[in-house]
Image 1: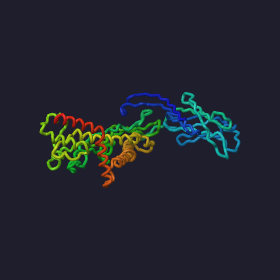
Image 2: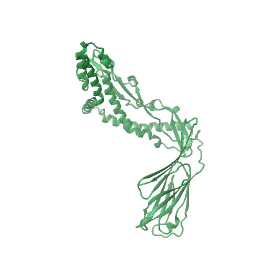
Image 3: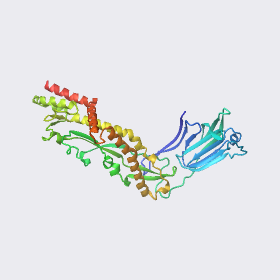
Length: 419
């Protein structure tokens, strides 16, 4: 059975560097599936104290209690096969930063000279104090193992940092914004270099074009502070991160006499205002739009709403890849941990932390998303078999209900006009 206990004290206030801050004194307790471990989270910077049930150890009701936090370990035990006339009950672990996991492991008895982990249970006694019991199957009974008490102490400051973080400050990545860019945004002239192309959708597939993080975000867009409670540097990006895409109609290709020599139709109202003498071309053109743009468009009409609905399906599919990997983006702060001495001052912290953010964005989010997108959309590798698969994907996409509904609306309008 998995249980989680959460205690929150929330305070909201405004300061200059961070517009709104939510402070949380938080204790998270996990009763794990493992029968021999309790894990708690240190709610603030401070010390952990407790008293082990030394009598239970001396009388073989439990054999060993081990408490671990921030690389410090306290052990109270009676070695397997040996007697113990005295066990010190009290224990203390000092200087534990906030959010540090605190693990308590209890061993109930010995078998073949080895400690055997005990099933444990935790009781909240209030005022940041807890009691842990352990079950001994030989006695079929629960025994007190140790108490724990969290006590806040004054944390050391960081002389390298200009600003202390407000207590409980939480790092968060800014929202990912999908931003529509003009075709000129990239160096690729998708329409000009492909004269038969009617329209296209493309996300930025080069790192420098995919997002403003690589091209426009600088140290002026990051604020840093030192969190005395967790004893770590923290950051806040002050600009949203964009993911760029291009979606456009290749109007010049469509109207060019050397290519399609077609007339652009932007809405159904245009059809209603046409002469009946255009009906033959209208009927041929709408038939061509029903499939993945076959014959019939040449010297006819191109309905831009149908083109746009097709490319929007590509955009929606792309967004599904973003959603698939976006947790990796929002988890970037969890991968960055820096002690006071890691940076000499705020500017050093800004430079190095921004570099870490960009590296993690690339390795944990952008690169996996891009690889999955290219492979699943049959855009890579560049061979005939993959190109054929991509063509079939385009055909299936064009057959989607959303696209076909728009085609049907245009077909009905043309039939009403030409009957």
